[in-house]
Image 1 (cartoon, rainbow, N blue to C red):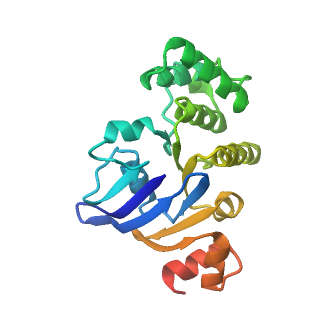
Image 2: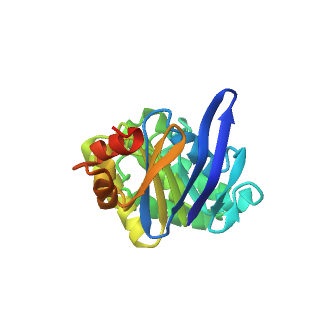
Length: 239
């Protein structure tokens, strides 16, 4: 479980986050929905322990993201907006390298890598150098890298950005399976159809603040809108 409690973050004159608070539960896909500049990536980086909040608190399975950062990282799988693979390594080598960084021995790293290659259908390209991959192939390897140490919680920053229809569908299916097995999955997105097709809970973020949260049917009822896009506009702007 990921808990965000009254988090504020400023960069110079820019107030990126203004008292953001919500909970992403186990066994659930929580969508963090907002436009560009809403604060999604800043919040994801705070949850991933890459930034410290100015005030407020983030906990992952009860562990504080600042004072227990190493323990939090061990329980997180993070897929950043930029996949940042090592281009001269193969996909398999990228995954195995991160397995070793997370403390798996050679045999464990090999088993987990092989299992993820099969699960994410990467056999056709995983032994080629990552520098030549398509965007969708890079995303699948980066997701495997995030999953290799069997984390309880997943944090994914706009994971389907740039994916073709088939790759995006496969990604959604993988995330649903992980949530069904009890994982906490937090996904940031600005894509309304992704919210409609994927998310169990939605947190709407605008100008660094949570403007609404709940299931999509609850948000539609609250806004009086017929779809996620109209609901977001009404709840975030009052229009």
